[in-house]
Length: 314
Image 1 (cartoon, rainbow, N blue to C red):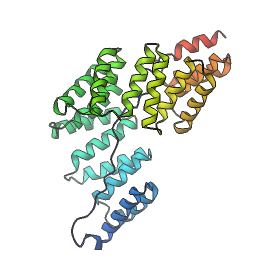
Image 2 (cartoon, rainbow, N blue to C red; image 1 turned 180 degrees about the horizontal axis):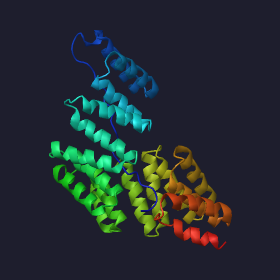
Image 3 (cartoon, helix red, strand yellow; image 1 turned 180 degrees about the vertical axis):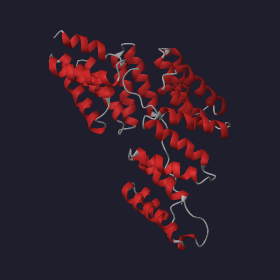
Image 4 (cartoon, helix red, strand yellow; image 1 turned 120 degrees about the vertical axis):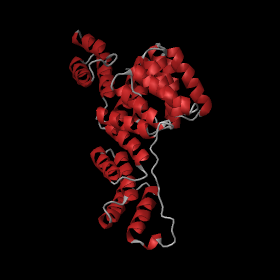
């Protein structure tokens, strides 16, 4: 697997659930829920959690507050707390089970608990096999378990239910990219771009394909388009930094890589790219340090072993 790809190009929508009965705002827990939702609209995530906490002090099984709090925890990368809230809802046995299995499966996935995510995907398919989301989740899990054929089958099944779904199309294209089936990947990206030309992940993946084909300027141009559409994604800057290294623009490349690391300090692809920078600068010890860190995290990472071996010879 090469460069940096957002594994899950689905955006979790915060569910701004409101109470509909005339007297619901008189209910204390309902008022706290509504206040929490207002904080979400203001993007005050910690403020929202505080109000959901107050609602849950009144009723510890208030599923609306548990669900919203869990999704906020997930956005804050407090995954263990999100998973605990999702699990609490499921223990209450209610009509939100399909949504919660999906959200908990994504949280397990982000938390590296792949077999628990697999179990949620299987359960979701069992109870909701007419919807595309169970197959989307299954495809993501299979990808992380290095079962690329299984991932393709899951995404294809999801597309048979929802043929114009860009999350499925881009992820299917990603699997073809991993398998070096570039023509298949590009055809799927063409379809996704027709559906939604403002989807940034399309252009990030196009940039990665171009880089693999040694078309470095095209790779740079594609990732520039991705950044224009989503200026907050750390992976895009890391990719642009790598392309700049190969375009002999080393210092700007390092700026992009460091900017990416500020947003996501634990990204091993950024460690690798920084190692490549130091190799190109002839700084042996720093090149070896960063490339070693990348290889410890992912021994099969593209480019890392090659540049590590080259660095030993400096």
